[in-house]
Amino acid sequence: MKKLQFNSPVVLTFFFISLAALILGTITNGTTTTVLFSAYRASLTDPFTYVRFFGHVFGYASITHFFNNMLLLLVVGPPLEELYGSKTLISGILATAVISGLLQFILFPGSMLLGASGIVFMLIMLSSLSGAKAGTIPITLILVAVMYLGQELYSIFFIQDNVANLMHIVGGVCGIGLGFVLNRSK
Image (cartoon, rainbow, N blue to C red):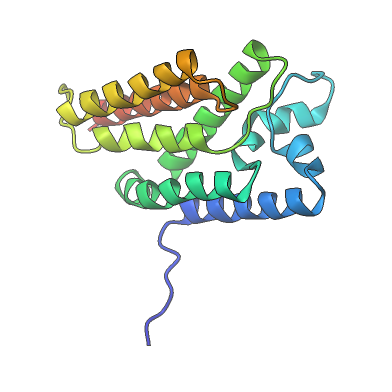
């Protein structure tokens, strides 16, 4: 009989925290999602404002939103965690979460940000750099960046929806930055 393996602690913990946040949000009719798991402009005297700077990556508006992000996280995350280690992956996730949370707070006072799309795009861009040799720029990075950034820019200018495309780009830039830092240290 085969044993189950907790093969990617950071990614799986992220998944289960997000699932718990989704369930709590459903049970509380969105209250916990708003209070803990969404980034938006609020008073700096509110201690939850600081929690939301990184907690927003665990919040979801719907089960579909959750599945879309978690599927990609579960596919892209574990190989990166194995390659770079859990501490590095946590650092990248926290940095991306805080940067996107702060930018949301500063630039978009009238809207909320929630979900792990920025984290997922950080991982996608990081994975496109994962095989790079120091001092090189992989063609896969260029192709992924052009396609990804092109799609996000198109969406920003021509599609009116509730998707935080700029924060997707921020996540992608964080992934590129992390990838170059990691490859330089090789």
